[in-house]
Image (cartoon, rainbow, N blue to C red; front, side, top):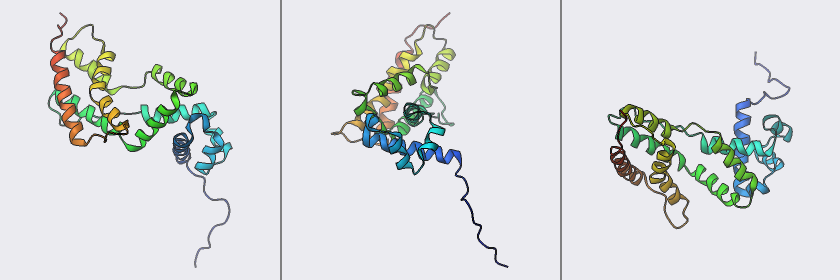
Length: 212
């Protein structure tokens, strides 16, 4: 006997699916309207969710966009290639993976929207400052910390080293990708440039006197 279709309310959408849909809508709204022009109404309309659902998951517009920026830009976990044999190979593959993640088109679009808005919106500056002060996990700094311990380097400002190395590699690629008159770097360019930068960096580190 053929089973009759069931009537009644459709099954509830999983919370994680609702959350991801809202964040995706918030990303689109931010890129189109900027933070100042964005609203929970616009996010609700774009996501197909009710404002009540939005406020259940994100108590305020500020918290919604803070979570969006943290997860889409700051929650980056680059990996070292498992077959890396040397410190140079480990560091190179970590930076290449980090670059490939940050340079994804969706991330570049979000970064452009934030840059365009940050000079006019104090709220966006507050979001960025709060995230930086929060000390998100930094795989590059963690690798440098472990490397310095292994090599016996003392009085090392790992945060400064990390910023310098990031600027020599991923930061440079990011500027190229954001530049209107410049094409985004190719995978081959990223690999070559990163390899050279890592060689220069590690050669310079070897000139530091080890402790003991």
